[in-house]
Length: 162
Ligand SMILES: CC(C)(COP(=O)(O)OP(=O)(O)OC[C@H]1O[C@@H](n2cnc3c(N)ncnc32)[C@H](O)[C@@H]1OP(=O)(O)O)[C@@H](O)C(=O)NCCC(=O)NCCS
Image (cartoon, rainbow, N blue to C red):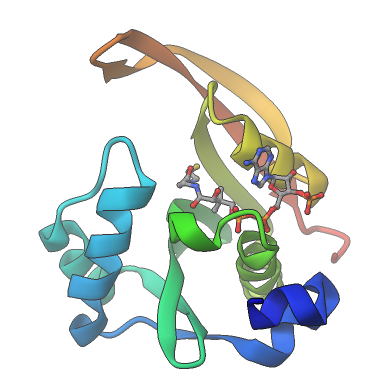
């Protein structure tokens, strides 16, 4: 049985850690992205983000199982990418990574945005659960092989702290 199943979700933090992403992590991160995202970023996009944006990796016993890329510009933060390896999804790691991110961002920004595909119900549920609310819908924003898809823009305000 996997160790996280034995310990339960509340104890994931004992095993999982979060640290800044470095360029050497990008091949591993990119490999996860290919499996986790229907429209994966290229490796070059992660490399560019390591130098231009804020990037974190979520590790489990030193192995990368997830990552987040975000920006903070004049008090406004935005998630550009966040994912957990498919074989580790649904175990509480995405929530742990997002909680960590929100703690960091709440100290540096007043508003935190993200954009999510309207069909991505698991991600939308997670974002709502931690306090993000829908602020607008961008119709037909994404072009997919099965046709256009709406984007939902969500935000959380940190004016009064978390
Ligand atoms: C979105 C994502 C990061 C969430 O990470 P995760 O580790 O799977 O999420 P968690 O296990 O922490 O679950 C958090 C919540 O997400 C929702 N969720 C997770 N997996 C789900 C599933 N298969 N079906 C429905 N809801 C699900 C649940 O609401 C869950 O809440 P709960 O703890 O009350 O059950 C992950 O699913 C992922 O990498 N998806 C592919 C990439 C992606 O879509 N990124 C977001 C782009 S905006």
